[in-house]
Amino acid sequence: MQPSHMGDVTVESVEAIGVRAPLDEAFGYSQAWVEDRTATLVRIEASDGTVGWGECWGPVAGTGEVVESVLLRSDSLIRHA
Image 1 (cartoon, one colour):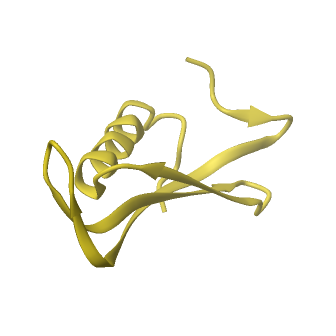
Image 2 (tube, helix red, strand yellow):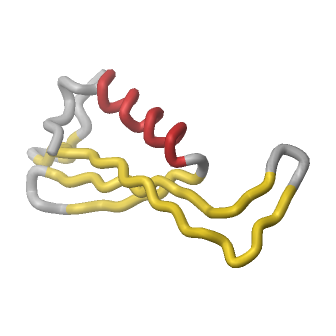
Image 3 (cartoon, helix red, strand yellow):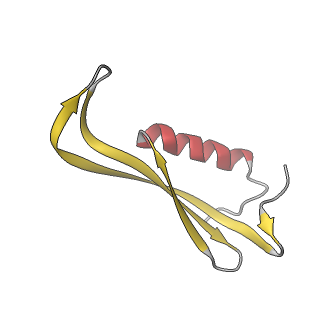
């Protein structure tokens, strides 16, 4: 796997931030009752100071674990904040 970069700019840090917002009214479907909405925001900072944001939909715990797993596998490519 090659390091992520554009010219001399490289990825310096990646951070996963779980967010949760309660719903005014819970709803149910075939799998469960839903009482809140969750997402994981992903913040990436480059060596030139550029910051980018992304979103991962899904349960905060599971999505955060996936992001952390990817970070652990690519540890040699990224300096963690």
